[in-house]
Length: 166
Image (cartoon, rainbow, N blue to C red):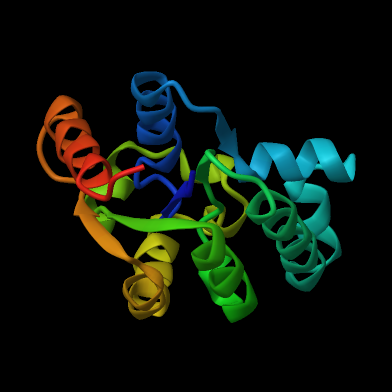
């Protein structure tokens, strides 16, 4: 059974919708960032204190581990698409869904100070969105717009996943 891989900006809803999807489909949910911290024995913040490259290397190891498994619902880190090798591995084992949420919606309800790449403030959300939007779209098998109520978005996600088959 293929993995279902959720990609998108920090604060787009990957974890929220990933958990809900896993519950409804009776599949295991894995937040890739939490998995990375547990496996590596370090916080994401500690990796970024060293360098972004140190974090991206750890993220790549995480993607390799998770891509070797089947039947998971995976919420990736927002920058996973920055390395093409990650996208290739995730494609090999799963369906990649880009949860597209407008940057202006993210900045209104995400605590940016808790996110390493967003600690510079809300303007960073707009900058990252512009930098990454083409990467997200190129990596995605499907694009889900996160607009409307949580219930409506989840219903569209469920339909999208079920139409793909097992």
